[in-house]
Image 1 (spheres, rainbow, N blue to C red):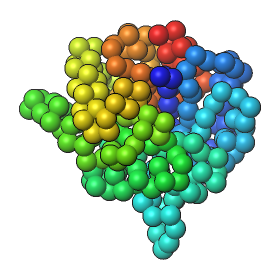
Image 2 (tube, helix red, strand yellow):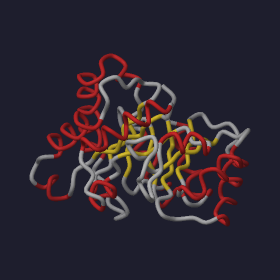
Image 3 (cartoon, helix red, strand yellow):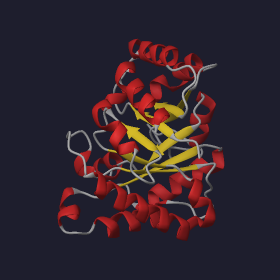
Image 4 (spheres, one colour):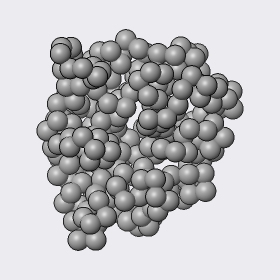
Length: 247
């Protein structure tokens, strides 16, 4: 399995931020892991052009379930591919919360992504209230089953576990809590897609930064990270890439 360091720029970045991509590519010309950046849609094509010939891959942050149509403001999986993307983030907690996305909607988007030839990074995770109620495994198990296409393979699927309460807060679960969830997800993913689940990267996300990356990457079944704020600067994200390459 090739490990993955994925950066989600969220609604951040203009053309000036592309300098960080060049700096990252120069600092890490041949990392021992896959490196992915998912900028706003306005930057995908320019970033993809800039990343040609480097180790950096480019992805989108969402896609519509339909390939075209009267969907003002949306972007299709085919449009992402046309812009140079290889991956797409789906079901991020900010989409599930801010836009009310359901597992069924995430599944439909994932089906569209796979059909277009993209790798789907499907996000799952519990809220603080769900964690406090002891429902973490029930919640992430339900989200995984309802969001992942049954025909997905290790070649076109990545799962990102992001506890909602840890995103952008500086808080992280304990290493044993991360280990428990990732082991559970590997088992549930096997039930969903079969033996291919053994080679599907399971990413951890939620306040991953250079200071805690090494210890997180040492946890069993953690095959990389989905990084938010720390992916905006080449120095910070590069340190995370280096930690994963050494894991």
